[in-house]
Length: 460
Image 1 (cartoon, rainbow, N blue to C red):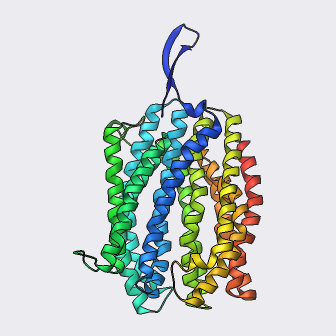
Image 2: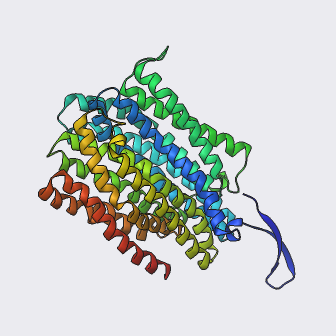
Image 3: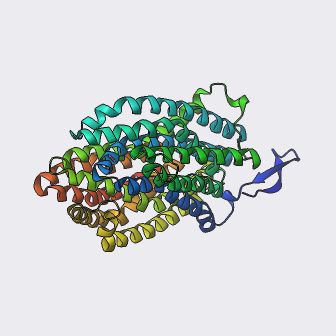
C-alpha cells in the first residue's frame, strides 16, 4: 500500500508535520473494494479448498469416512471460527487506530491479538480432543464412524495453535491492505494440502497409507507452510504495524475492545456449527442419508458463500478506516457497493445450484439415493442465497465498524432464533424437505431485520 507525504499545520502555531495520507481515505471506493476484495476472494476460495479437498479424497475411502468427517465438521468449524472471529477484532482495531492516526495503539492491537490467539490455540487443542468421544457418540452409534472420527480429529486438532497464528497473521496483513500476501500464503498451504492428501490417504509411492488420518495430517502440514510464508513476508517486507515487545504489558481497555469485537464475530462464525449439530439431530431421526447430505451441503455452501465473504472481508478494513476517520459518506457508499457485489455473486451461486445440483452432490458420494436427496436439498436451499447477501453484508459491515453486538444479533436470527424453530416445526410437517425450506424462510426474515439494525446502528 502506498502513502502520500503532505505537510500539515499543527494547532495554528505554524509548526509543520510530515504525515502520511492513507489511500483508504482518498482512493475511489470502487477501486478500493476491488483491490482489497479480489485477493480476499481468492484467499477464501483457496481456504475453503482445505475442507473440499479433504472431503473429496475421504469420500473415496467409503461413505462411513465421509459421515465421520461430517460429524467432526461442527467442532472443526468452531475452532476456525474462534481464529477468524478474534482475527476480525484484531483487524477492526488496527484499521480503526490507523484511521484515527494512532500507530502505537495499532501496534498494541496487533501484538496483543497475536499473543491471545496463541493462547486460544492451545485451549482449543486441549478442549476439542477431550470432548470428541462424547460428541461423536451423541450423533451416531456406528462404532466404525466414531473410530474414524476420532482418528481424524485427534490429528487435525493438534494443529489448532497453528491455525490461530495463521489467521491472526492473515487479519493483521489484511488490516494494512496486504491482501496479495495473504492470498499467496494461503495458496502455498492449500497446494501443499492438495498434493499431500492423496499421497498420505492412499499411501502413494514411499508415503505411508494413513487413510482418514492422512487427510488430517495433510491439512496440518499445509497450515504450517502458510505460517512460514507469513513469517518470511513479515521479516522481508515490513508492515506498517509491528509485533512489539514494548506493547506486551497488559492493556485492559485494548484487550477488552479486542474481545468486544472478536467474541461476537466468533459467535457469528460458530453459530453455523451449533446449527449443524442441531440439524443433524433433527435429520438423523429420518435417515443417516440426510446427515450426509447436510454435511455435503455445508462443504459446498462454504465454497459458494466464500466469494461474497471475500467481498465483506475486503470491505472491513476500508469501512473501518473511514469510520475511524469520520468519513460517513464514504462509509455509506462502501456498504452499498459491497452489497451490490455480494448480490451478484450469490445470484451466480443460485444458478449453479439450480442447474448442477446433482453433479455437485455427486462429487462427494456415488450413492444414487444420497445424490437424489442432496440435489433436491440444494435446489430448495439455494432459493434463499440472493436475499441472504443483505444479512451477510450488513453483519460484516457492522464488524468493520466495531459494532460486534449488532452484528451478532443478525447472526443469531440466521442461525438460532428463526431457523431452529422453523426447521423443527417444518420437519414435523414435511420431514427432511421441511428442514431444507427453513433455510430460505430464515434468510428472508433475517434480511428485513438486518436493514433495520444496520440503519439504526449508523445513527449511534
